[in-house]
Image 1 (cartoon, rainbow, N blue to C red):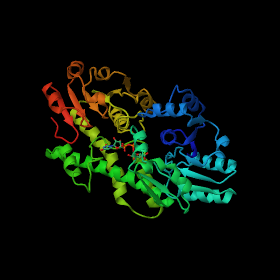
Image 2 (cartoon, rainbow, N blue to C red):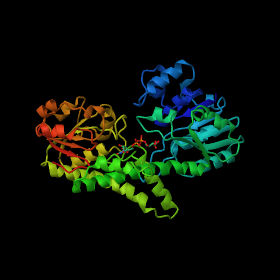
Image 3 (tube, rainbow, N blue to C red):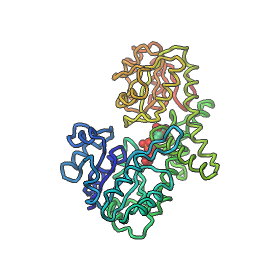
Image 4 (spheres, rainbow, N blue to C red):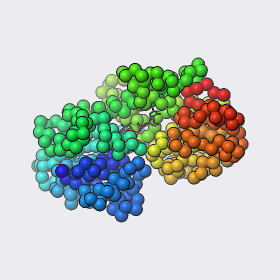
Length: 433
Ligand code: UGA
């Protein structure tokens, strides 16, 4: 059992903290947001929607392995390991904002009175861990050893991904791995591969993995465009490609483009990094460009389906199902473009309305009931693969829409059923009606 201090209770910090407690460690999670910590202590409110997380937090609070606080200074010297899991947003120029990381680093230097392992779980530009190590070496008289331990958690599957990962990557520049090995002993016993490498390599593995997955998504989306033109069946194309073990079926679901707080940001960070080294990496730039273009292509397609000023019911506002996160959501971007073109938008989402409101304000109307959103609409646009949209009540939907048109950007509907009910159906990756 290790005593772990986790700084930052966003997606990464909260999931990691709860999961480290679950695999037997004693964990304290810190956040300077008082209200957030109050909610976590009282159990009244967890700040994110993540399957299984609430129960995990409550169980581990009860069994005395998980604590929350706002003041890290009390815990630094009681811990074996400090994990930094604060946000690293990009600024307007696309550069990483280090404000939160730098604050943690200076607090650790200020309060540490013993040797410590400091793990960076936040996704940081390559070279950041080495830079922090230099700061520690210069400014602290203790041995503060920086370790890169990137996370590979998908929102909506984060708890599962933590407890049953494909691999754990640890970037460590010293030979003695005794303490760090203890962090993941339970997962190692379960057969998970723990890859030890140096810090820079670990940081690069994270960016390379996300960029490669994003490339798969962008690639299948371009194949979907071709398939739409040529009369192909995109799901069979993905299946047929995926049968080749060298390719694999995962991340070949055509859709509205990739979004979220990771893929778009991580690709840009790699592009920036390569440019700062005078390297031209055109493939990376193309992934980003292909995804940006996709939103415009979709909007042009919708313009061809409707007359100006029509009403569109947008089903799904988050960047994918299973999360309330709307950061870099294709749905939000496409809504903005459609609104600029004069379409009236009515939005629905099972979890994402509050966050979508923060991004869209009152430029669109929001509905808790999807059929209220569809009332009098000329088109239903399915943007995320929520279960609610897989089993739509066709009679009800047909009864409330002004024009029976549906555009499914996630391949969730049964096209034949809709056609039989008199809908004009367009599905991503298939020729339209
Ligand atoms: C991603 C990675 O999958 C995680 O391994 C990584 O830890 C995380 O980023 C991160 O860096 O923190 P996440 O952003 O939660 O996780 O979402 P994904 O499930 O990977 O989906 C990313 C985007 O690609 C979504 O917009 C999704 O709808 C889209 N996507 C994914 C597709 O359009 N098609 C697919 O087949 C798969």
